[in-house]
Every structure is written in C-alpha cells, then in structure tokens.
Length: 250
Image (cartoon, helix red, strand yellow):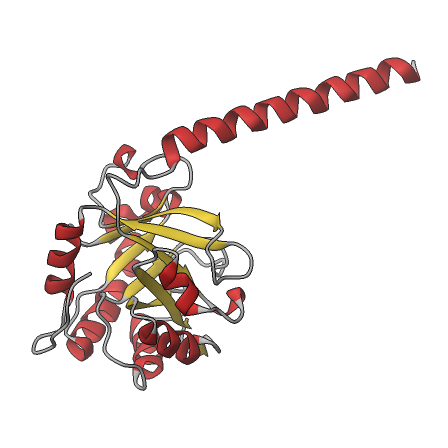
C-alpha cells in the first residue's frame, strides 16, 4: 500500500510540474510583450526593491520608471526621494504613484501624495493612482462612493500638478469597480498572463510581470511597457507635460 501511495504521489507531482511548465510556456507566448510592437520599456518600484543602481537600469534599455511616493492618508515611501533623484540623474522619464486605500477619503490621500511630491523635480509622466485589492483594507465602498473619492483625489492632484493621473488597475478591480472610473480614464493595467487587448477598456501602460529581472535591481521587479511606438511615446510625453514645462522626448 505504501508503495502504491508513493507512486501516486510521484505521478501527481509529475503531472503538476508538467501542467505548470505548460502554463509557463503559454504565458510566455501570450503574456510577454513583443519588443517590436512595444519598444518603450519601464519598471515600477518602491522601497521593497532596496537600493537601486539607476545608471545600470538605464543602460539595460529601461526608458521610464514609476516610483511609489505614498499610501493612504499618512504613509510615505522611505525611498521615494532617493529613487526619484537617482532615476532623474540617470535620465529616465519619471512618474510617481500613490497606493489608494479604501479606508481613507480622497482628500486626505491627495494631500498626503502631494506632500510627498513637494520636494521632487517635475515629473515627465502623469501621476498614477494604484487601485487594487491586494494589501488593501477589508472595507469595500460602493461604486458611487469610490467614484466620488477618486474624482476628489484626481481633481486635487490635477489642480496642483497640471497633470491628469492615470489609473493602475488589476482585472479583478476592473470587474468589481470598472464603473467607478471615469469613462476617459487613462488605464495602466496589470495583466501578467494575457495581453491587455483581452480586456474591455483601452489602455496606456501594461504591467506584464511582477517578477522581472533588470540589471541594477536586486531581486524581482515589476516590468511595464507603453502601448505604442516611440513616436507615440513622444506624443504621450508631450500631452502629459504640465503647462509651461519643457522636456525632450525619449
């Protein structure tokens, strides 16, 4: 009997390994962006990545980075200023992002985010609002309540920065709260298996991996692409630029 159980267990493990390998191959086929179609590459980081050698990141072909600035109504990422300054020196196009919690109102979160940005150089990319369930509080507002808080946050940030934020979303969030987002919202979608074209909304940025390896970063990092050509990227930068600011395009 013990020998039979051992053989069954070994067969089950082999089947699971084969299935995992098959899914990995399918994911590589359908979920990894083609460099010819998506030439503009980026990463998004927080203090979890530890010290980053931004010069090496730039030399690895990374054009832009989103850097975590804040979370909720009072948390500030301890490496935001360090990452922002070093990435700017390395020549990357930068955007800051805020993790939006369902347990705080839009005004207090906007004030926290803007305070975190107060000492940074102007951003080339629009601010980003991180909307997801992972790591969030257990409270679930109604779509109408969430929409009001999001519009409050976005209105305050746009007024202060001259830039309209984009919305980082997961497919799960879109299914639950897609109607809470403005119809013309710029979408930065997380989709680590399927191409975002399978979603119902148009998108600007795609986070295609949460475990990428990039020279200059110790350990895994989120990897992103812009949805378009380099000419489209230049146009996106021009549209995103605050009024009166000047910058050359990648």
